[in-house]
Length: 132
Image (cartoon, rainbow, N blue to C red; front, side, top):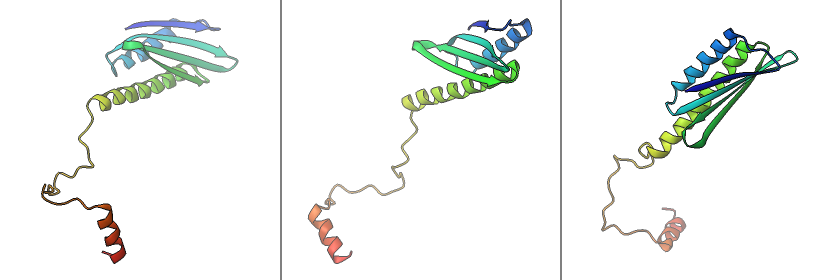
């Protein structure tokens, strides 16, 4: 996975780069299709902003933004947001292609015989009038 770390209005130190790199590599463990990660660090007055953009296969782009009083805390929050989004995206794909067995069908219920006749609209109305 390619990791690009840049700063806006702030000089990014080596320790901040290493920290962001370890957080980005951790995200690669959630899903093996992640190809690149862009980390942008920004300072706005007293707030530290971190934006992480993950590029995955087939045009999937997942963005996580976080704001905190400390750059390291903002990195942690952005990583948590991206991890949650990756889990959710992966669940969508997994559930879509390999859905669980339908729970509406009761396997223990007896199978209806083919000879039994379906109730018509008139039969249902008659039963409702009689109170059956």
